[in-house]
Image (tube, rainbow, N blue to C red; front, side):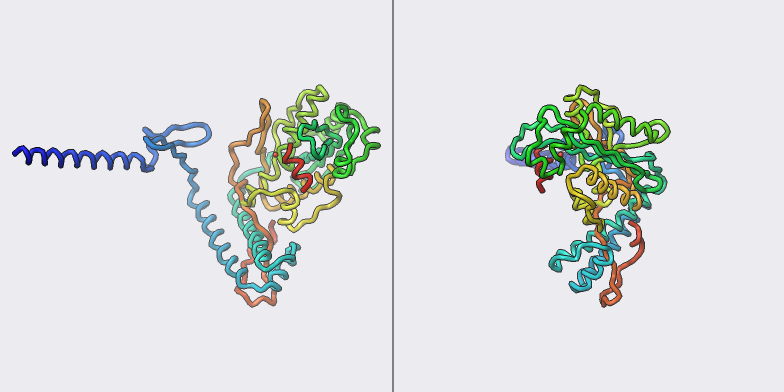
Length: 381
């Protein structure tokens, strides 16, 4: 009897252990969020379990999910057609979109597929944001040029060129430009590296006004165009450095309060990668993917700003609703949390089917639409 009792206790313990293990396993599984397990914040919904914290993904409505599925289906067919094209057909198609036709066949195929990917996702994002209105009447595109040294990592960068390009978001065109050179104080003599890189000469900065005076002239220029009075505007830059590093450092050196208008801006790279669903890009990559060429001299601040403006205009033409996506506060920059529907990421590159191609037709629908060490590294590249 003792043996039977022991056996029964062993069985009961075994069953209890199995049930406990099952319960523990189940507690680690993600279950639908209920009011008792949901922790809500301003940024996201969070499910708390015994094992992990799971952040729930925002759910698309049926129409959004259908549009995304439709885009992926079309891209799959397009990619299949591109895979069957000859090198000559690929080059013909790329030429139609004024894209680079150089490279081996695999490179050409990737370039063409990226074009269609960018294009189709732009269409999808445009549909998702069709009820949204552009908040800004103008964009002020800024791309500072600053003193620099090739090997000194602790070099203090001073702004020596203050350029700005005014973009009218309604007409999708450049309305006006501003350009002034500034005299540096901390390092008044330009390095050979700086002159070679920017094209700015020692004579130009020697004759220039101090930054404080140029800054005042810039704000007067903004007032002439009734920015922030009659018209809403946003600063737009190619990355975070112009506002958060160069202007911040320069205002401290010049004993000028950091301007309110520079605390929030549009980072073009973020807007581009979000809208076209692509990876990290630089200025020249964006131009190349859009079938555009750099106009002017690289690292001339005004020319850089003009090309940045051209990309912003292209985004507007493709239906992108540009919005503030970065801001500066308390010594650091932070991204804006809400990237809405039209700022999803997707990249694409141009492609169409040449008449001589014998491959299956590629859909034509909508084809006519369209961070300081790192800075030095980028400048060298």
